[in-house]
Length: 403
Image (cartoon, rainbow, N blue to C red; front, side, top):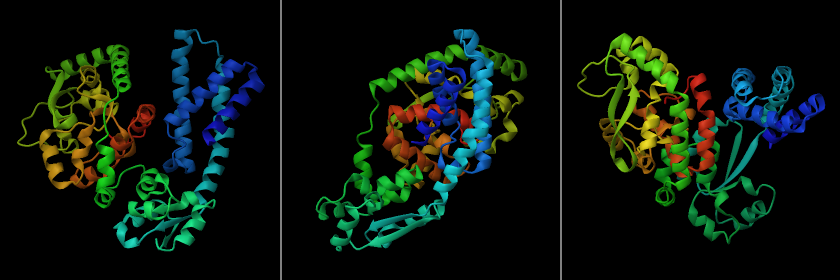
């Protein structure tokens, strides 16, 4: 709702100053999209410092895109209008957004959990760690009158059921949105591994339904073709730079684990010197091998560009969990519960875990990152994919995640 409010403010500002309704509609959509892509509306970025840095990054993105659009599409919007909207974003939208977010962040929230706290195995602590102002009260499932009273009030959405058996025993007062796993995923934006241990049949039901849609494949093919064409000049420059610095090969090939555990050959621009290793290592353990060109292309994620060919072939999708080496996968499946579920979908160039979590360098961090991959596997859709693609640039600019 707040995004729509800001869109209306931008539209109103442009109509009042520049009169053109169509230009105002386009600019409001364009500016909101850039702000959204920089994740200014995500709760994790609600403090003023992050808001300022992301609004500034959005402004630079607006200027860059405008530079491209004006000559290519003969865009008739004047530079004065572009700059005035950037000023409006800083001096009007940013202060209003900061006030609204501060009010939301400081507002205490009260939730009623139907069941016993002992059944949750630390999940409550995870919630309170992220949201200190959460107040959670536990209700005895046998006290149906009290539960019915809350269920028929404005607090219904704050009533959560710990066990599925309570949904049927409460005479239809509650539904799917009142089941605890749905609430946990919505608030934490991940599937905690503890939740899979607590609700194995619930998650298996969802994971068994995972399948690739025809539309997803069409989008993958379209995006990969466009990307290979648009980035072809950059890819040529990278190839020449690698050859001049360290010779051949230019393309690095490695077997990775894909959908349903099948092996495929993944392609990247070579960013490291060729050195034989006894066993695979995490990338942060191989800093001594990175070439000068490699440091640049890895920072910009340009070393991943050849993977659009993997997408075109059907080995990968644009969006999905990052593919891992077979040895790593074998170790992770032995030591991390639920790791096998990330192979129910194709691996991707970018993904939910990449925009939500940092690069991993040990098994504990891999387990935490897996929770975001599992959220994606369970909730994947075209809209989720578009959101991830839109917000991937933010992860690169602010150096989070790993492609």
